[in-house]
Length: 84
Image (cartoon, rainbow, N blue to C red; front, side, top):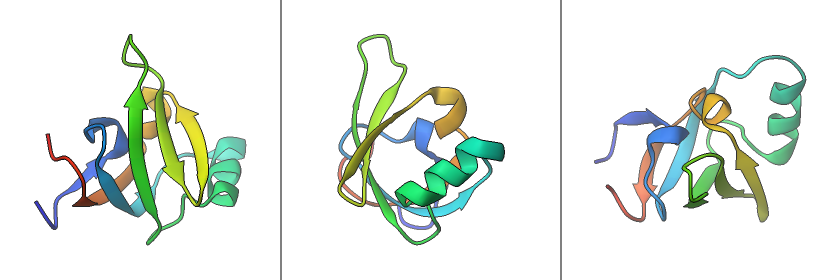
């Protein structure tokens, strides 16, 4: 469990991850950084839409929906919640 770094898009509903890296580029990168998607912060996977995309995440008391193409470029280590 601990130590495995996975993309946010692979995390199960209810799990919490500590961000280890973000590979998003351009304007979206700046926006995500402003919202708190920086290394060391925790992000909780709230729920996926019925069709699986987008997924709602909570970070720094903010809820944000990200598409799979975006969340697959943000990496973290599972630190709590559901695992699979």
